[in-house]
Image (cartoon, rainbow, N blue to C red; front, side):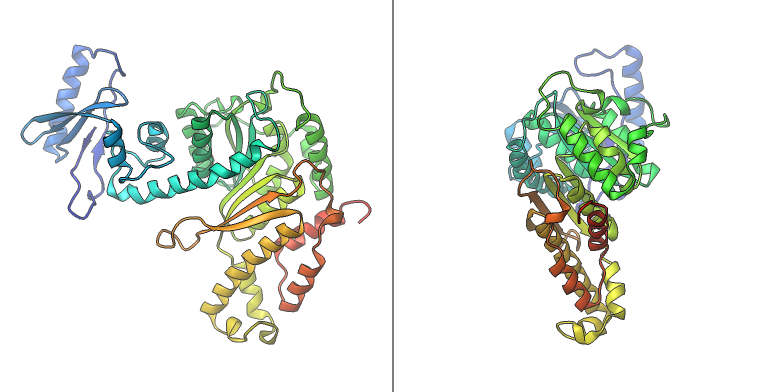
Length: 430
């Protein structure tokens, strides 16, 4: 790797760097490869990339200062790893999680983490720490093994950082994972598929190169389009492939690995159980914009998903409704009369209603700080666990009327409550 040095403020301009692939660890280079390396080193030095690193294996490297040719051998031992981690033990270490950290752009090819990436590194390590107790609790719900891996669904996955962090946490713990991520953007889906293949994590159905058609709905999936039909399909899937399934040869859909598809959340509701080989154990929704978070929560409740991790984003729906609402119905009229206050009020009200709805539908909910407010203002994490994860979903037991009455008094109609009402309305006997 050939790179420019960092400046005093921790920046390296545009972080100009070049990477030249070698023959691989433990393989002697040919004479032609040596000549190509020397030529590339000379060109890089002339371009100001005089910080040059030859990676020998995952733990050893030779650093060369091309200005005067001084070479130093570096070994990633415990003290070096601790220095890279900023002097603090992290969930994702540079020696055990290097492949992931490089693939998502946190770690440089030479094994360093620049000052510009240090903040992001701390964020994903904090995210990994938050995943740990959720995994522990899910392990008590059902048996998780290679024939029945933990099933996760990442909705509006974007670049799927949360998916890959979860996969790494589980890899380090030796827990098999089957994860399916969906997003409406084709570019981020293609990028996630490439990352999964580069890390050796791609599920069988995502092993083909990008561009091959995937995720064609089966007849069952295609017809399960209404809330009631989806709930019935989920219950049938739970009975056929869920907790009561004896361990044995896993179906193709249930094999461990990561897959990604271009779809909206409604599409995911139709296809997720078939993709995963059963109802998800965990639903993820990281910064799903505005009402996409409500769709994700409603899907998790409808399917009876045991655990949910959601970081809401862009709570615009209620802000618009509050602008037309009766100011006298609010705690203080100023909360809706002034734009800045109205948006802040809408943020808190939206997430409070989400928490209340989850609790009314049988979930224990904890609200945590996702990352520090200095990193992003959207730093609230909603963590929910179903109180009785083995019980069938019964919309008739949801206690949503008091919440609907409160929303009516405030003059708001959140998407989440409307989605849950549609599910209840599609359930016979309610």
